[in-house]
Image 1 (cartoon, rainbow, N blue to C red):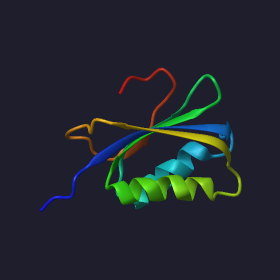
Image 2: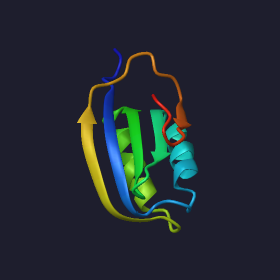
Image 3: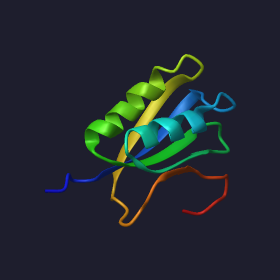
Image 4: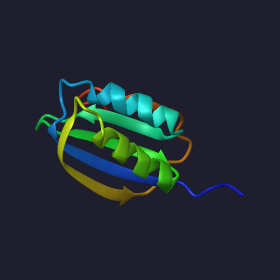
Length: 98
């Protein structure tokens, strides 16, 4: 039986740009077997859309918050519809469409 896939759109605020956040998220998401993407937003936040097991999504948020060089002040999590046939996790550039 296949485990149900959950997808979250997560917005991180604080000192989250120019600190290696995107590549830390990339490494952690891949290690947790998640698919999706991460990118900087123009307003200084970082957006993540990640998909996989709910427990792995929770671990991603916990591990990002525990990074000493990243200072997250606020995390907004919005469950969204899973994306079919998505493979891998990547860094998206500003203005790049999914």
